[in-house]
Image (cartoon, rainbow, N blue to C red; front, side, top):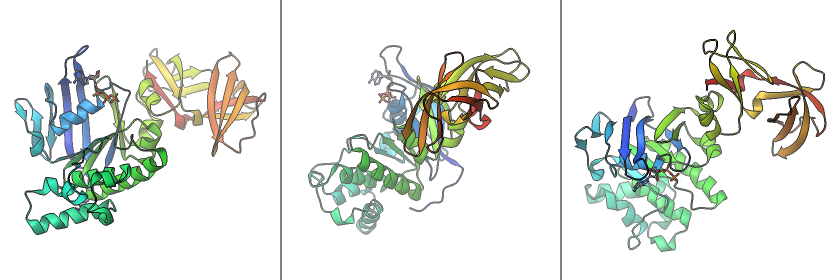
Length: 352
Ligand SMILES: Nc1ncnc2c1ncn2[C@@H]1O[C@H](COP(=O)(O)OP(=O)(O)OP(=O)(O)O)[C@@H](O)[C@H]1O
């Protein structure tokens, strides 16, 4: 089970299109995505973006109308080609566990291993249950297991056949917050160690930023940006990509002499002069200094502590309001006059 992670994608999705009927009928349109061995990719996007449909297409539960899905050089879906789901090296974990109620944990995990000899099968089952720390509950039936334990059995069952890709559709959303955090950390660890390429649908941007190796952002059927959490947080490709990962201030501007100006100062802009752009600023990129220092004059409206940081609502001279995030030790209080400057590391300029 311990294949090493490497940079060769195990699954490559190119120009995938899925039509389902309904409003305009296209649930996935021209989606491109690569999934790598030993890496967890979080698929994030608003409701109806096409996340579940894309997962179902990779699993072979939906047909592609255009584009292709290739795994380790084998075409799974493509023009005139649709490999049956059971012939894809693809494990799936859904929100509702979908364990067989009349089978024990061992029997559930063994279900997908009927092609192996008895000895090999037993060994693989125990290895899989061990990976999810459930050997002590191996003989229990699903109704005797907690929600979190059932989800771990579902994970072990999906991993046991050593799939090339693991697909997880909001696997933790039915669980309470603390359990979710624990199970999420364990699941990601197990997935990475298994060497499989994993794609996990989540609604939780903070969780994706903290735990995934890559994030893919989906909107209206397309992957609008993918990359490492840092790259996506710091260099979003568009305003909507930026908003999917957290708070951002957006200022409409026009490029002049390689720069775009905002009420908080200017930002370097790679676009040609005259281009209409949006300057995106993360709350950490608004540096709040004492009044009278260099920068844009402003006043603190409110100060709200949030653990290690403090959230400052600030009114600019124009009356516009922005939100800054600073370490909780920051001295600014409501009513203080302050000066604002931009930290370029948290600023990006995108086409409008
Ligand atoms: N069986 C179906 N028939 C027709 N249209 C469908 C069907 N299933 C989904 N759709 C539509 O396809 C689009 C994508 O749906 P999908 O479930 O893939 O989105 P999602 O991003 O997973 O959303 P959510 O986060 O709410 O689960 C939506 O517009 C949805 O209404």
